[in-house]
Each structure stands twice: as structure tokens, then as C-alpha cells.
Image (cartoon, rainbow, N blue to C red; front, side, top):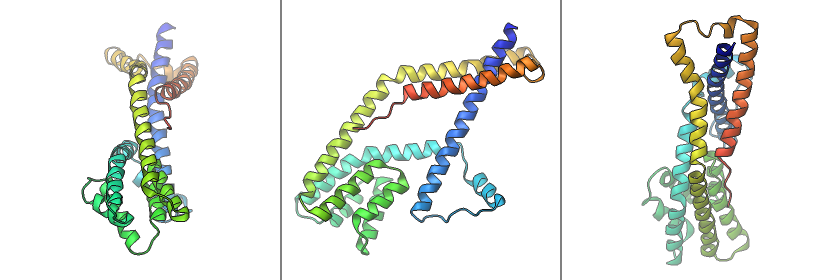
Length: 252
């Protein structure tokens, strides 16, 4: 009985990790696709089940969330220094578009390419705040949306754009500092969550290699099946709870 319980917990934890990773990847894909549809980069999906299956198969990738997160982190880390350079250009008398164009040539991608895109659309007559808003929605970068709001506030009500952008820079830098502090303080909790969730599937694989058929009752015995379902449920709840505790939301 003890061996069956141990196998149930181990199997449930392994299944929970795989299911959670798949769920996060699918959710990230749906958000990314919806954002691109909103800005008109892709057409709305067809209604037929065959077409939906084709789109899902072609775009669902386990590493998509990680790549999107890495890109968002790069944009966030480059934004405050880029805004400092733009403020410096504005202080010497340059216009907004000219200042952004000058800075876009000196900073690396992905933010450099984004600013160049903003400049290209602004030069053909699009309001710069609308362009920034579309880019922020497409990239999923909240700080770019704040910059767009600041630009829109200045265009509608006037005032000193330099002072507005300096306030935005201060807010972004404070949020980045808080985020780094939180990540440092929760490092132990996140590492503990990884170890606790990795141990059961690792032990199950280890025992199964040296004792083939050890986990068979989990699939054949009614009690083992019930324990498997219970283990998966508890593992999913535990994983989500540990993830919530180890990754608090940081908003300055």
C-alpha cells in the first residue's frame, strides 16, 4: 500500500508539471494571437475546426512563452536608459520624433527596432501616441503604454514633456528595483518549489528503471487510478500555489 501511495504522488506530480507547462504555453499563445489580431497584424481565425487545428498546431510551441518573456525583459531593461537619452535630446531643442529617431540609432534591438518603427509611422502622419499604443499592445509591454499615455497627455494638454518623461523614468526605475528585490527575496521559495516538484517524478523514473512494472497498479488497479487522480489534483494545486508565492506581482 505504501508503494502504491508513493507511486501515485510521484506520478501525479510529474503529470501536474507537464500539464501546467502545457497550459501556460497555450495561454501565452492565445494572448499573443489576440494582441496581434487587435492591431491588425494577422487575420481573425477561420471558424472551421480544421483551420483552428492547423493554426494551433503551427503556432503552439513550448518555448514561445520563454522567448516572449526574454524579449519583454530586454525591452523593459532598455526602456529607462532610452528615455533618459530622449529627454537629453529634448533638452537641447530637438522635436519628439527627431529625438526618438536619434536614440533609436544608438540602442540595440529589440527596443531600437521598435523605436525605428515608431519613427517611420510618425513621419508618415500617424500620431506618435497612437503608434506607441499599438506597439505596446502588440509587445505586451505595459511601460511602453505608460510612455504612450504621457505623449498623449502632452499633445492634448501641453506642459513640459521633459518633466512628464522624467516622472515616467523614475516610476520605471523604481518598479525595476522592486522587481529585482522581490526576485532576490523569493529565490529560496522558487528553488524549493522546483526541487519539491521535481523529486517525485525523478524518483518514479529511478524506481521504475530498477523495478519495471512498479507503477502498473496506478493504471490497472481502481484504487491506484483514484490515487493517481488525487495526486494530479493535489500536485496542480500545490504547483499553482508555490508559483503564486514565488512570483508576486510588482507594480510601482
